[in-house]
Image (cartoon, rainbow, N blue to C red; front, side, top):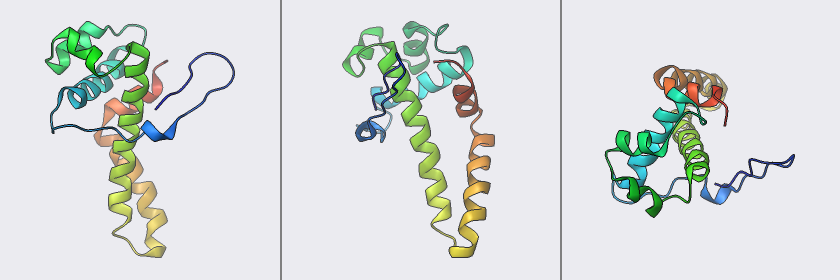
Length: 127
């Protein structure tokens, strides 16, 4: 995912919205999960890459094997969190028949946000 932070035109590249995955628990996925938690807790400006690496339990240099910089990590962490949210909603809604889908969509969207406060916080903090 690439979202241009500056200027008046924000562009979202959907090709990278779905997180790339290596082995389960890979350094990249651990970094994304740690980034979501840390950005949610501290906001973008107050979060350091050292904090994220520590939360992910990886060496600081490993970060650069997966991301260009803090902004790249932030944007991909947001895409990762939103993808996980959408994935869960779709999973639950697909089990319902047509009349129940709309109700299930709203219920599952809010239920996921209640169960994942880091996503709520991430959406509230500044980039």
